[in-house]
View 1 (tube, rainbow, N blue to C red):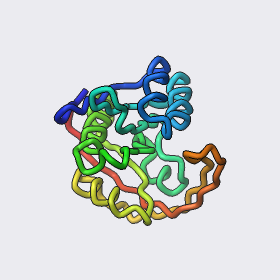
View 2 (cartoon, rainbow, N blue to C red):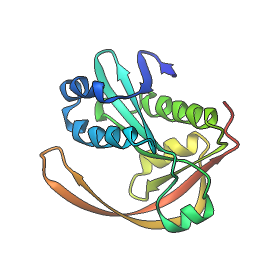
View 3 (cartoon, helix red, strand yellow):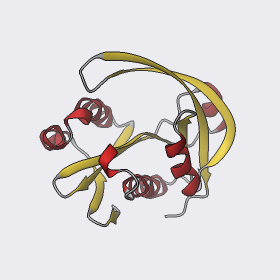
Length: 171
């Protein structure tokens, strides 16, 4: 996988959970759920590491994006989802390294297109994706999901997301 500076990106596994829990406890439960999904074969979890610290992650869903209009528009494209970089590691190349590694995996599996959804209230992520060549599709859809926050409280989120796509990926 790709490394930028001392940041290394590689596929995560269940055996990484003790290390993730010790270095990034706020993200451990979410990452554990993604890693369980990875075991089922429908997705891959990439984890970025800086020394002994977990600093970011992204999930590649081979089954594609789950919102209806985007799925109908890009039925064969995998989705990059849940890109997350620790606050203190942002703007240091971690998100770029994760997305470049995701693109390499997508190409290695024979795909040439990758889609993602970015929240309309997340301009920082939108700037990253734009810089990396992800184009606006014109598709904006409502997304609802449940998650557990850093305090262990279950939450329900509703957000508007814009579908972005990168065509003609090259390995």
